[in-house]
Length: 186
Picture 1: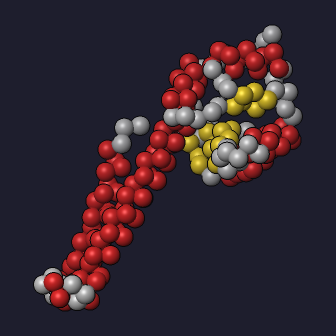
Picture 2: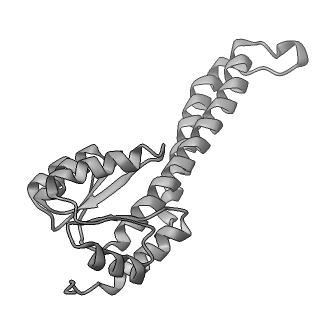
Picture 3: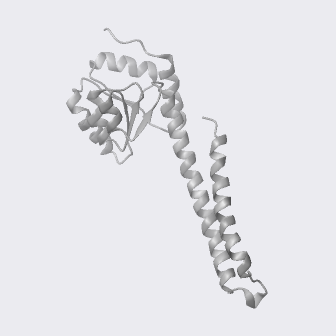
């Protein structure tokens, strides 16, 4: 069987995706034999082989029927419908204009490890968003009633002259917390 050379970073990317708890599938037009060989060498979990370009979107829908979020990574014209169908379409930077237009995320480089970095950044951003939402909620649950005088009976009050700066402080804390994403090692 003739097959393309597997880039060393592909195996590293698959292992890193597994470490993140991501199940990896391959949809290819290659023969089942070639696809199984590549999947075995890379540690890919699921294989859909001999898939015609027009049927890649249907293969994505099949994976979606398992009630899981499905990300599709592609770079060619043949990948565009599948990229658009996937919950998350990721176009590799060296891809065609059609693939780039169909994807929700465009990676500048054609390095599969960037998919791992994207997932890590996405998860960290989501966690940071929840932290900021939690902080803002707690802050406002305390600060707004204090500014309205609800706690005056217990000797806790917030002068009006402190109210506006206090609201700005909430925004500053959320912004500073978000800046910690820059320290994320991808």
